[in-house]
Length: 121
Figure 1: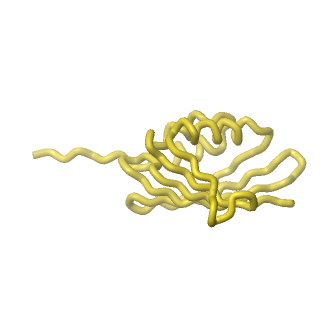
Figure 2: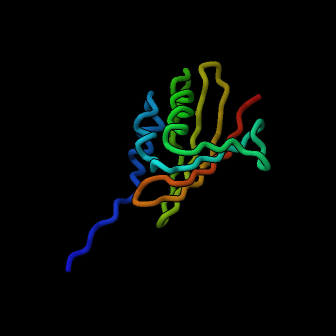
């Protein structure tokens, strides 16, 4: 009787996706039924922005990663079916954005993500 390996979450794919100039590599990390919650100045904890499914998530990521800014994965921790990471972003004028994300994983894909983000004002 053999065992089947369950695919793990690929942190290097996450790094390449975040630090690349296109959203496609990141979109591929999400399950088709994934859900993303975003909390920030405009989308408060009592009414976060919620994106349902890979198509809505892709639309948001396409917008973010088409902007003239750099993105850097600072830290990433994976434990079982959970992961967390910090992303640092900088616009050409020096304005910075910091985002912390907590992920739930299934079969190596993101199924739930909560992101809290803040930026210079």
